[in-house]
Amino acid sequence: MKFTLSWLKDHLDTSASLDEITQALTDLGLEVEEVVDPAARRAFFGFGALGLPTVAGGLSR
Image 1: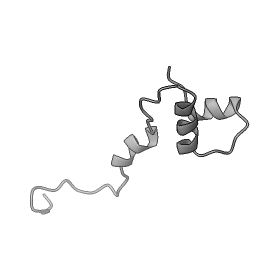
Image 2 (image 1 turned 120 degrees about the vertical axis):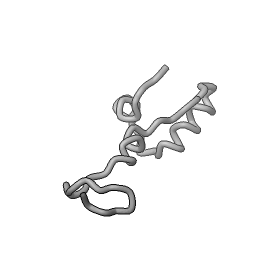
Image 3 (image 1 turned 90 degrees about the vertical axis):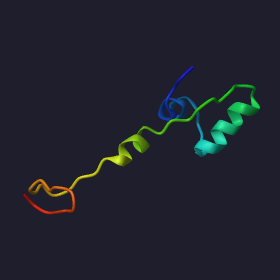
């Protein structure tokens, strides 16, 4: 079963951290197979200034 942390916190009255919640679920006998952070996938993208294309070595065309 997959669900978001925000959905879980909507149904729980807790201020526990993600690690504490996953440990509590495991202690209850529920297997926590994976925790995925969607923001981490976007960390590889950045924003920069638009400029002229460059060739290998950093020289402008």
